[in-house]
Amino acid sequence: MTLVEALRECALKNSERSKSFLYKKYYGYIMAITLRYVKNEYDAEELTNESFIRVFKNFHNFNYQIEEERLDKSFRAWIARIAVNISIDFLRAKKTMESLDAINELDSISPLVASNQTLEVEDIYKLLFELPDIQRSIFNLFEIEGYSHEEIGSMLNIPDSTSRTYLTRAKQKLRKLYESSQLTYNNSNHE
Amino acid sequence: MSKMGEEHKEDFIADFVDKIKAYEAPYKAGAWEEFARKNKSLPTRRVGNWKYWSAAAAAVFVAVASYLLVMPPSIDPGKSPVLSRTKSLPSTAVKPLALERMDPSSLDSLSSSLTYNNLLAAAIAPVKATISPSSAIFQQEDLLAQLEDKPLGKLPMYEDEVMAISLENSLPTYSPEESQKHARTNNFREYAARLQGEELNLTAATATRNKWEVGAFVAPGQTNSQVTMGGGLSVSFKLTDRVALRSGVSLQNYGGKVAGQMAMEMQPASVTQEMVVHDVYPIAVKTSSRKLNEVSSALVTVDIPLDIQYKISRGLYASLGVSYANIISQNRTNTYLNSVGTETFVGSAANNRIEPRELLQARTSERTNDNLEDTQGFSGFANFSIGQKIPLGKKVSIAVEPYVKLPIGSLKNSTINYSNGGIRLSTSF
Image (tube, rainbow over all chains, first blue to last red; front, top):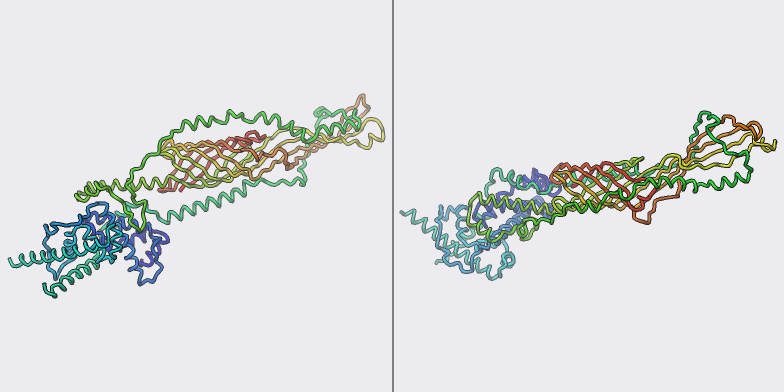
């Protein structure tokens, strides 16, 4: 089954076969998104499944009748937006977004397992999760998902300027975290 | 910090972003199976198609059945009646009217007094008396009052749940306490329990949506003399777990007849030529009689019922209510038994005797506009049924429902007994 066939069959028949194909094909993609927002893998799985539920229920909103070359990219963008919305909602519901001043943010820094040269995704995720939820969310939304500060402000119910501030802080902190982890890594290598 | 260092730092952010964008988590074995198991309630078009086809098939069946069974057979009064020759009757079997003593003027008066309407009225009178009294139409209010009227249970739900699914931010909202609790712990059991709770809530939300139930049905039945057929669509709304209101619209036919000799209509005797020539007593007189033998009626109605269903046990339910029957077509047919005989008189008036005669009988039917059902007032039925629902799927089920319908309103006062019963076969989805 190809992506085109699966999308068409899902839209027209909503068949289990097509849903299974799409779920398995894009599970990793959605999971990677939700893992950027929630640290707990179990939560991420649940958010991934929630995303797929919403994808299948709102499939009529997706226009699959476009060029085949653009189909995968278009579908990924659509389901990514759903997954991001769900993840943000989850975080918002937790009401554990950080207070505006993130003091003592550098109190605990986990040493990375690899150097800068070989920084793996797992290490990057570890760094990301050293950020407060709101900073991590804004970093993800702006740098990775490509939302503007106006859109982020609307999604998180914060002013645009606050979004910019948090993004700056997030980058600064990532930098410090990265340097600290490098320092730790170098010291451990010298010893 | 040197410019090179700054660039390196920005590069590291860019490297972060590139790697994150390119990353896809590995597929977890069994994830789809688990997802499919947990979300069986997700709608599938296959079920939808099945429902639509079922509804279409039911509609076609109803239309064909209505055409074949509901439309009354047309009777052409102009057609020759079927004649049957009866055996010769003994002379004592039928008492001849004293025609020999009648002059032509008295015969005329007899004829006028035995008009058709008078005879029909006389025939209907005893039939009216046999119609079921109103007291027999069940104590509907009493039965209604016995139905348990439980308050609608409040369904446990989170704030918006999955019901409010849209592309915008509308994921399930968790209470702060629960969210914090959840964030603090990774305890699998606790989290699994919460998920179970969510499943229950999802089921409850789905149940709320499923309070409405639409179905199609056919209802073959039988009055005291004719087969009836009906069918249509029904819709029910669940008031509580046990009580539901059901309505709908259906096309029904009802037929009935009253049989037996109801009246006799004498035709004037025709005096043979011999009587005139001899100027004495008639030698032979031809007589004919016309007996109203049967009155039949057929109605086609659009029924709009309002029933209360009470769930007795799993799948078993009882229903009672009333239905308004809008008569869209009706006809009434009178069937007559015509007898024609020739009587021969022998001798004078003092000792005349009647020779055995031959009697010809013929049955004729005439459509009449007399005594049609009243279409102005309320006409309807009191409905009683008990049914067994057999689930075929998560939402689709069929039900077998024996029913009894008793006429009320103007139909109750009709000469025809429209009481009927049968079995309703319905699908709901």
